Length: 185
Image: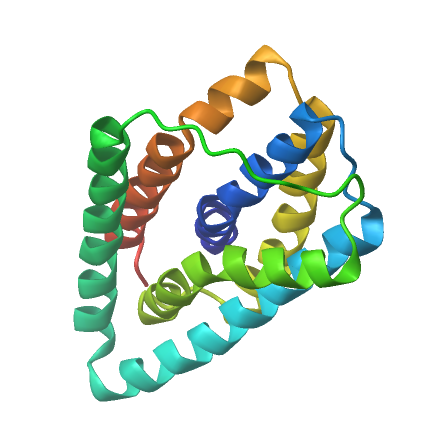
């Protein structure tokens, strides 16, 4: 069960990678493997650091209480993401992007994408997810989702996932919170 929870956590926190890949793919711009690896490495590193911070919190709060608190916060965050998605106004922002994502761009994207992983990483640690499994899956899912988004590009599936990113991410966070409550050890 801990693998499933870590996988759901990683997918939820890296769904934005798919949207970034999709954004580049729609414009027929490629994200090279090295740039993709840089982005995934940064998000995994930030997740690791935030989970270490979360472990400090768990030393102050009893295991059962911290797990239940973290699970409820996951559910609340997921609900917030879903509500924000429903209330989001339709805006399109035109961003100037280069044809190939260079090192500097990959580092900037990695840092921007990892912001989401800070709070979620702390919560993952509070709910006692395996830190090394989460970090490894964060790297792997980050690479896969960016690659998939970049290659799906302008397809119907890509547009749907991109359009409902917050809804899907929120649903995954709620699922993670519910599973953490029921299968805590």
